[in-house]
Every structure is written in structure tokens, then in C-alpha cells.
Amino acid sequence: MGRLESSEKVSGVLGGAVTVGGMTIDISVAPDGDPMEAALALAADAVSMLAELDVRCRALVAADFLTSYNSEWRFGAVLKADGRTEEFEKPLLTEAQFVSALTPVALDVTGAKLLSLSYTAGEMFWGHWVCITSFDGLTLTDTNVELQG
Image (cartoon, rainbow, N blue to C red; front, side, top):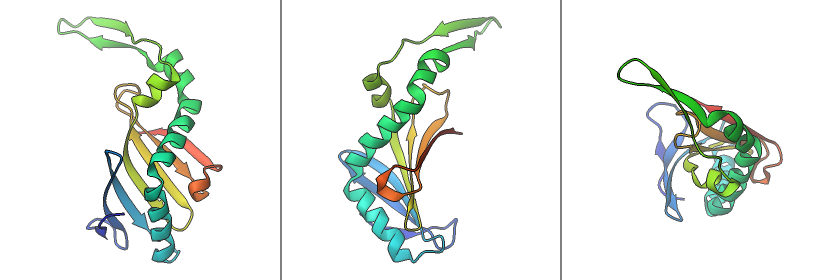
């Protein structure tokens, strides 16, 4: 899993980074009332199957946001130097194109069951990033997918 060090910002939290399959992802582990060993065990399991976890999380993001992107987020306007606004429309994306634009950046493990995987989304959501939170660990059946930032 790599080297984790005590966070300078939050007491009792360990942090570091992992590189798996060419992806370097920040990781934080917090016990949140559970033994630290339980949180570390979930973190180690998540890192060991990060490639699979990534595929499953990307599918969850696509299920929740691909239609919204194609019907709303791909339209916009930019302010030109002369003060006029110019409307634009980005192309429709297929599911494969949509998920390939996601870049995993952070894995946060809290306690023995809660984990979150966060992605940057390029320009798809105007600077927002996407966070998938699983309340049942690696099972990913009790999840929340949301835009943040």
C-alpha cells in the first residue's frame, strides 16, 4: 500500500499516495471510532483491487451523470474579450468516452466500512470533481455519487 504518515492537518489520520496501474492517487485513512487496524485493512484491500474498484466506480458515475452531461453540462457560454458572450456546445459523449475523461485522484478510507474514490472530470462539469462514497466498503451496493467543488 505504500508509506502512510500522520497527517499534519488532522490528528489521527494517516496519509500518503499509491501508484497502481500507472495511476497515482492520494490516500487517507482515518479510524473514525473503529480500530485503526480495521481502517488500514479496508485501505489495503481497496488498494490491492484498485483497478477493479476504479472500473466499478466509473460505471457508477456514468450511470448517474452521463445523461446529465449530454443533456445539460455540455452546453455553455464564454465571455469574449470584447464583452460579448459566445455560446458553445461540446460533442455528445458515449459511455466509454465519458468514463475515459475521469481521472482518479483520491482514495479516502474512514473506519472499517466507508470509502470514497474521487475523480477529476476534465472540463465536463465546469471544474467540479466527482466523488463516489461507499457505505459498505468494497461491496459498492450502498453508494452515493455526487459532484463536489
